[in-house]
Image (cartoon, rainbow, N blue to C red; front, side, top):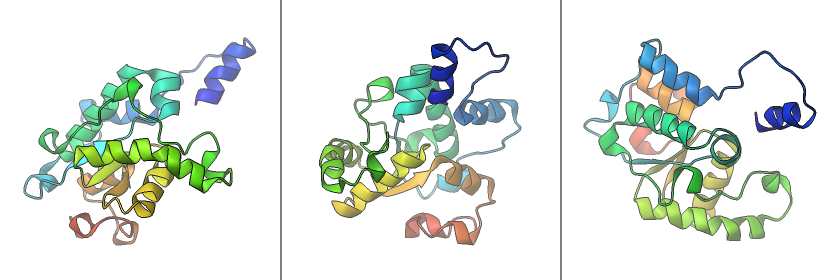
Length: 185
């Protein structure tokens, strides 16, 4: 998304389409009643979640308005009372340290050392799960929890949407913690 926007601007290429994050689509679909998610599944469980603001989507592309859309979707899916924000957050949130090719760069010790900022930030929330709408963030944040024995789980935003809709298949739950693995089965 960022690369497309930057390329269009750099080469002054005219275009007649909207560049939009899937997060904005989720938010629109929820508001329109087309994506019928809710947080009923988490009312009694009271599992706490935090969310990672991805660099490419938030800081480099759409800014705080998209961060607000992300929070709207997350709170609708997990319950506002079960959401705890990182500090700092939105456009000021820390990079996870996994993007820009760093996951594949061959320097895991350096990546993990930088990632301690994100690890500590997640731990300070006390959340059991960190929601990641970006695959690079997911891989890095998951690795940080395993490497530093963080005890939190990492979950894709789409996984929670499917869980809320009651359509998350049993085979798609392998990376969830025991508190979520059986929800809705």
